[in-house]
Image (cartoon, rainbow, N blue to C red):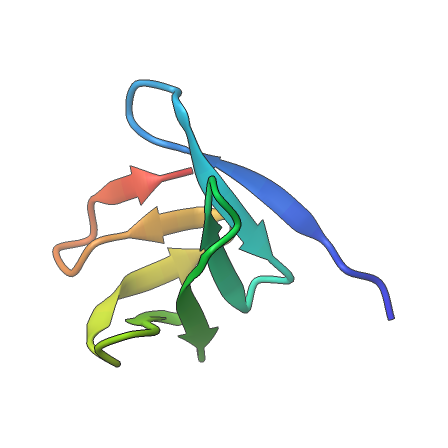
Length: 68
């Protein structure tokens, strides 16, 4: 099985974390912070819906890109 990791950057092009296999999000300290199910992003601790995944872009609930 191939594992793909894509770096994530914020609006200022600052590295903020990793997108792993389009199914998990890790912060820059490699702590698992979110999971993705059916292209929707959910917080690991609270199980609250955060937003949506489009390709390698993480969007907030309003559809604004928060990481790319």
